[in-house]
Length: 161
Length: 397
Image (spheres, rainbow over the protein chains, first blue to last red):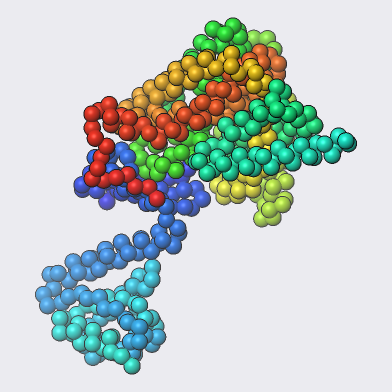
């Protein structure tokens, strides 16, 4: 992917991608750190249909939303040619037996043969979490395994106290 | 009444009134500069009330105001941006210079103000208001537009051109000979080059020398350096404002950002005083005779700016709508036209009518520029015979 960088003297810098549809989508970073999401118009590619100021947290959250989709797509793509293995996302609900307990307590690999390869928490992606990583309610666990194993894993993670 | 008491009361009234005008400007989304000018016109010579008590303070405050305006202009740019801007857009910059100085020169010659008046009016019609334009582009959500870098690089060159123009102007206004003027230009060009080189190589050293974690000592060092450099530049005939501008360029990175933050309120205070004083010293009764000229000048110099932006945008392969947007965005003139007129009028080398013409002209352009920038698209679409787009409205949050 080519990222085009244009200095905006006195204001900051603009970084953008040219999409397959011909649109430009990107970010204007102001000197003072403020971020603006921009999207060019379809009928007039020189102009912007939207330019949306984002706070630092909002920008980070949006970035991880976009980034985690890519992470999952990557995992899925990697497993595509391994027949019988799939990737699944399971939400740790409030009140789940394992919310607040370390990952190792689930004994996931032993019980189901599946692996938790990532946790998506708020704005962060915790890749290859260790057994002592504590699960939080609201975490999204990315799990790889057979269909059968994943079904069991879902039951375990969603079981209540 | 004791003169000091009178000064305090009058100053209080002026600042209080300006506060209201500034708020009003913010409400209707325009630059406060035209309102400050109007405020100044309403009082002072030939106005409702003559505020004579604030002359002493207003005089030095407006000097500091100009220094701070230019210092903060310099802080906005890094030396690297100036150099790359100059390299990439010098053709557009030259076109801008020639096309937009001509209307000013013409009107000065028609009114019989001679070569000095022509030089002053050339600067007034040439320099767009980078303050107004950058703000309008941000407000309209056009920072992502493809024509925006074209507009900004023209503004960069204009501001750099100011650094060459102001010393020439101050030399000419002080009535030095042609040779004297030439040497002033030589000195200033050498100084500008030296500062750009120093800023590119050793900007961090200057920044470090001024930087301080303590707000109070930072502000004092900064203001002290600005006044010192401005004074020294003035002694070298390079114009105080240019000295401040160059200091601003030499300060870079984090220091420049925190300098902008601490200086902004001071600039607002002193620059407001500058615009008010300019209005105060302009007799409103001199405006009606020059109103026709101001309007004609507004129409002609708006056209030349639109052409400049159109041409520059076209060279970058931007479509018709974008060219029109670039042209309209450049129309606004403001603070720096008044700075030029202020220097000229203060020197006494130009007729008082020039102040009236400059005030009227800037009042028109500072108000019309942002309006033109906002509404240029529907107008162009109308002429293209296209309906305003329906399926995808312009969104800006």
